[in-house]
Length: 403
Figure 1 (cartoon, rainbow, N blue to C red):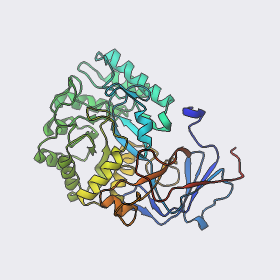
Figure 2 (cartoon, helix red, strand yellow):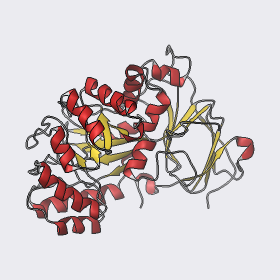
Figure 3 (cartoon, rainbow, N blue to C red):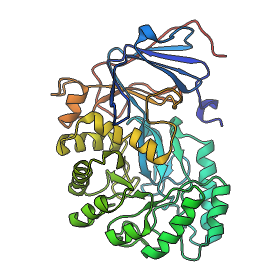
Figure 4 (tube, rainbow, N blue to C red):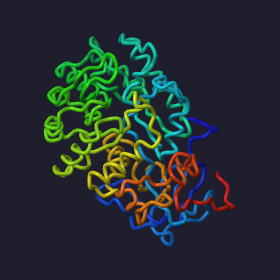
């Protein structure tokens, strides 16, 4: 479907050469021995050394100038409403601004800030279907927003979930933001959702908006949602002993967010690492919220968790890309043939104390972004939000024309 500018995918062949560092998004091999990526019609077709890849007939060629290439970042937890406006902060352009922070995909945890949000079953289903359709048709700045996440309410029955799934809804909003707060009630509805291919996220910790409630570890475990939403609270976290209980007590996704308790986030990361289950860790912002909008929120989480949590930065990039893609069943987030051509080209920020991009992140600095590509289309050149990168990619003139 057509997005801004009339197309959503690059028509033709994109070649990116001279990549100094290629992060894969995969925990099993986070750094690839490669310096070239080739994409056709918005999908990756080759990754490797330039001399071994078919780089001919490029429609567009990019010289990365020795900078790093990562998969497009994925924000696992946002609260959109309509278009690129958030009533929570009455701010326009927040999604496009986040593009300048390297985010290429956002996942709704519920359109909960919709003024007058309907809580009756007919209305909540209508809102979810409308949001799903709207963001399928409109991609602010090119960012892919997976919208339409209904907040479940008491009185829903199995057929409601079947109807939502048949209409294209694939997500539930945060369980616990509506009238369903008891674990046994949530478990039944989460199971219905899962039966019809709808993924669920549960609110964790203290209340965040009017109508939400305190959701403790016992409730989270009983509900058995697919993602432990903001395990570090949004904003108020559970006691650390309950966070450990959640990490040890189930195999669901461990979502750490920007708008949460930083100590709790670092603690959850440590527990996941001790358990040897880093593949469960995914990152979100939980914005827009009372804290505002965080265009660099995912980059900030990568740098904070790496530098203070003593985790290699390439692993934290996986938590912001491939881990989320695998848990969320997305076609992006990993650099390999057949995946969406969503890339961030970045480098060490100018004057960072780090010796290179990864070392600068390990020291707590954000990288500078020189280009963001979504489905093979350049959507952002030098970021207006990150610090300036030492090296930025350049587009090389080519003679080939798209089909």
